[in-house]
Length: 461
Image (tube, rainbow, N blue to C red; front, side):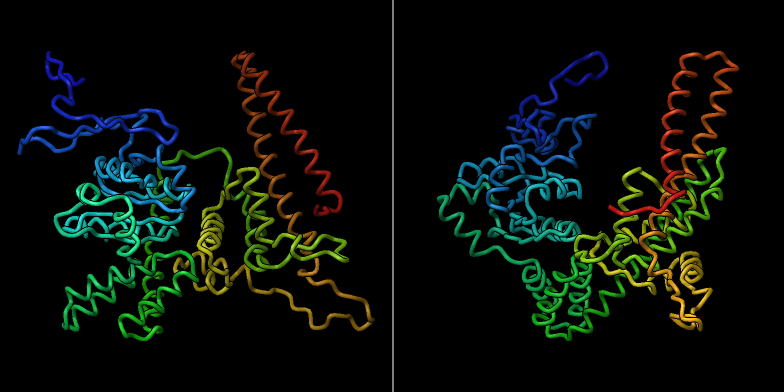
């Protein structure tokens, strides 16, 4: 119901209603399609945005389709409510709609929970083609596989399904769905004709699409296919994609630095100083950059299978994330987050990536951390005694660096709680005082355990 001045009226008057379900099957909103011809009225009208209904984060029909999507490991994506219903009636049940909105990242991630394979079924007109092209890059960027099928001009999934049997409809999809490279190449080359400038634009467009694919192997396969279809050397495509990825990385870091600067400007000063943690954070980042890909063998590594041991970066990330620890020093936080981003993209980590980083502050700090201040000229001294290199003691150094950092963090928390206890005592806030004393005791016990670890040798499980 909508209120306008002193009058109430039905928002969906004169419309057929499509209930919109959440992924768990609850009705969270409605879509209404007009039944009469009215040029002034919208064809479709949705419920307004609310705390439970966000149009860009919902896929129409997903609750009913998710089981079939999992079984068939594929999802068909259409535009409207009637498209979903018509396909479902035709026996194609693994189908969802973006509910008349442009496809969003949130909607793609919903599908990704059930399958990595999407086929876009849009109208064959210009609007349908543009919608398909918009969705391709978003889907690929999420590491998913995408195919496209356009219906004959003047047809849409709804009308086409009514004119054909279920078997004919499925056969049409199987015979006409195209890989995004074939679809885009054919479409763009048709418009480019024999114009070399336009053809260069086609190559640029395809490079832009391929560059967003996170998986290196998949990206390589598509580069080969693109090279073959466009009759252009693979190396040229690799060069262009590298340029685009570097440019995007630069833009991302500028954006992150700007957000961090704004956050620092708007965040009130806290009693604790980030310099309090700088020594510990510096050591963890140094070990991460220098030895991240080394195997962290336990102290007694006789007959130990390397596959059963974590790498240094795996151990450090797991330990920090287990306690939800974020670096306090901005530059170390940037390096750490950048390291994790590269891992999530499937990229191998190389020291030179940080030394030659587009952010000069990261480059300077990384170069300083990775420089060897002391060089051992011999593995044995002149008297024959063995010299242990740092790399040989990683099983002690890495856990020790983590424990020292956690110890410092808890000590800071304890100091802050002491101040809060004094304030609670001054204001005679007994409930708050009891709560703070309990919190202090719990942290103090953890601190004792950490101190004991620092006092002895730390053995990996």
